[in-house]
Length: 415
Image 1: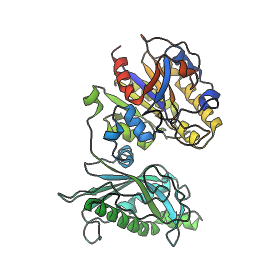
Image 2 (image 1 turned 180 degrees about the vertical axis):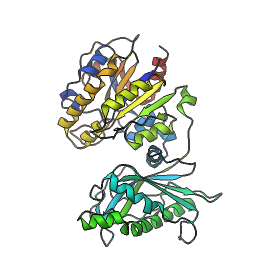
Image 3 (image 1 turned 135 degrees about the vertical axis):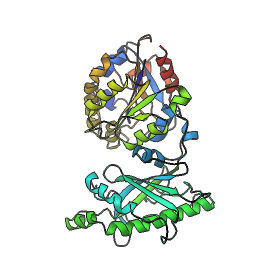
Image 4 (image 1 turned 45 degrees about the horizontal axis):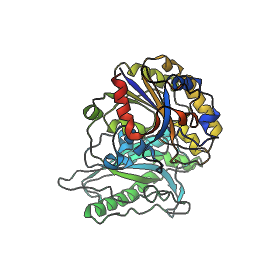
């Protein structure tokens, strides 16, 4: 027996105008009618989850204990082999003017094919010898998608420790959980957020790296060509979400579950890799509305023959929620439902839900509950007709929390 856990990112909305309520999804409805439904609160009824803490909670890893910052999860998802003690960050390529003021946080939405070429000058930054302030620290930079990337600081000195307790340099995100107006502001200076020598050293290292990166990027051929073509250069790096990497016991050891992940976004692969899931890379799994759904679902069907649990993730529902584009979110749900049809014929238990609500009426994550359905033999059928927030209030599951998902999966595996 195996279980498919399908998470549509940001699935939840607010009735009566949620995307689920405005869309037609006969295959999901079929699963609910022959299964059971309910409402999911990932943490509690007041907290609006972020994707990283939501997924860890759903995977059975309490984020209050296991989440050490988003940076390491992004880095793992970008295939960086982290070591204990590494400090990792999310990054943006950005454009600054001659005075250091941030003009564009996404460097004119630079595309992956160009941004990838900027890895080399960043990784060429010397971290030993004459480079002041960053001796014995290795710089590891990976570009992921378009302007996005990850930065890792790895301490090479024996007996010395770096710290993640430092502030961001991105003026739009001065600290975790805070969104600020950034236009007209310079790159922020990283500061220790606790009184410690390690935090002071790490902040200093990051500030010196930022300065050297600007110098390197200003000389890069990619940026010279962009300026010539009247495009914004990617001449600076903004960082946020610092985290300290420390490995955790994998799902197989904690729960006896052999699991695999199929996703497009680095964060979701990183969350899965962090808890010991195997990553199945699928051609065309882009993490946006153009992701190859057919290939992802075919890969999931195949993986269910080898694994106890297959975690399948789709991102674009959340993106459309943030864009407040309910029509596009509803249309994408219909597209997903249509592509999902081959999987409803499986005997495999299926769980479909989201990691948080992103109502199109709000454009941000909220604490609203997320509809959840479970389809499996030998479980009571609710006979509900339509999978959405309103219908699932009457489901036999009632209200469940993120911490209940792994126990439910274990129960389904034992049916």
